[in-house]
Length: 375
Image (cartoon, rainbow, N blue to C red; front, side):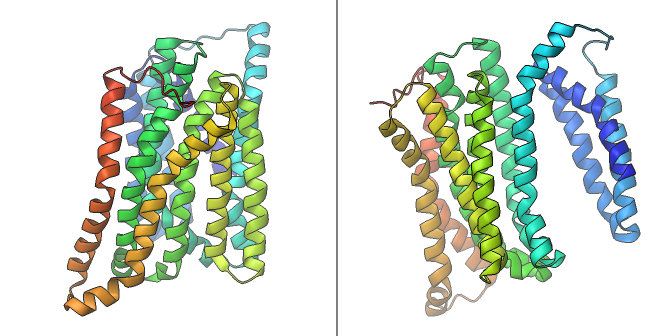
């Protein structure tokens, strides 16, 4: 706990550096700073293997010091002590709803693992975390896109809350990623059993839970764009409310799932349900804030669900019948089976990839001033 407390203090220069460089649109410095932490974390693995948990703590401290030093060395402005009581009060008032969102997300995002550890055991926590191999790359892509888009739109439109600005924050990026991400997720679902068997054989019991839980990450990532819009609209408290409702469902459902013997797969299912409700509530609050009716909200929601529904159905169909099909044609090589499975998802997802490309191309050319979702 002492080491973690020191670690949090050491992250302050890195946090300030990240904020300042984002504010000045210097994402090159941000990228290098985050890469330092990522590379340092990867280099920790062999030390953890030989020296255990203490090596993890010491390594994180050293990595954080290196990252913070880099941000401090490349700061665009020098830090100065400045006191303004009115400004401080305004910042606290503005930041409090964001604080509530962070608290709610921190509590409910980790609640499922705490429940698994307390009602099952820590081995199941490790099995449940298998989905991270797919979710972490996806989270990095979406988070980076969301961060850059939010900054660029704020730079261009400032505090404007006109419909076409809010739509650029929410509806356009959600349409892009709801068509682009599900085929990628589907490819991961197909590859996960074989790759887990070859490289992580002890984690095979966690495959089903991971395949379910990855869709929770999908809905959580899409909700981040609605969170950006609610921030611009100064309605961050609705984000906290949405996460609280979804978190209660996630926690209560996880406890019931384990109590009735469904294990970590049941927990994963309620994580998906909780984050789907979170994403839906956030989208509902955005559409209502813009003055759109219930029909417009349902239309936007169905647009987002079309691609993941098709990919999920295709993945279930493949997993249910691939052994019989390959057996009928005498295809025994597991790598050929994997290749054919990936091609199957690529073919199914080609239309959605093309659709995402057209939306991006139209957005770049400036044709999407407004989506006119009421029509």
